Image 1 (cartoon, rainbow, N blue to C red):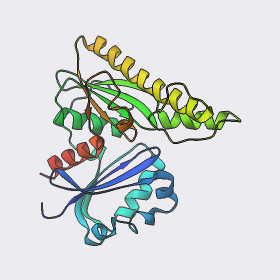
Image 2: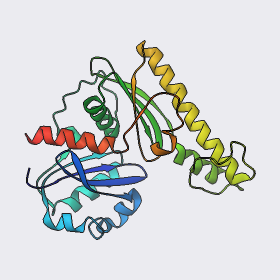
Image 3: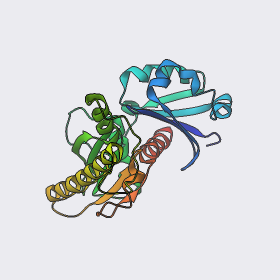
Length: 251
């Protein structure tokens, strides 16, 4: 294709915009979802502005924040000349074995992992939520687990206690904190890591054999070197899934 394509992933905390040229990300930016909802023009006024001035023929959008979806679609009307595909509008070459509610980010994460990492594969997405998605040995999306991610744990502690402030997660310098901030950081970090390892083991027991593990999400880089299971770190997995699905549907 002559023009880069645009893919957008609207998450609970952050919204990601990426232009792909073929299979490679040409430009990528992330913005707080709340800011995109209240002042959407921040997207087109920043480093992506030169791409939006050129415009593009096609785009793809996944969202887990319905109230932000309409805002972004409206903003993109001037820039996507032919069609901005929603996940529900794309023909996906992946069977899902149940009819329950399934987040579009998990669909795209599973789709990308199936394409890039093979299957059976477990997608572990470490963001506002901590999610586990299983694509089985036949390439079928079987479901998974959803829990609180690092940001949610930190925010809950800060919001529900009088002496704990909101902090930014870091790899702990000490396993036993010497003050409240160090203690919170260590506690959240090792709690999330332990949950990741335990849940992967439980899913593998369900499947009956080891699985590939694709690690993604905004916090994934913190945990990649510490998790005992072999993992493939793929921070842009959802965006890459959107790009693959978009290319297939354009063709």
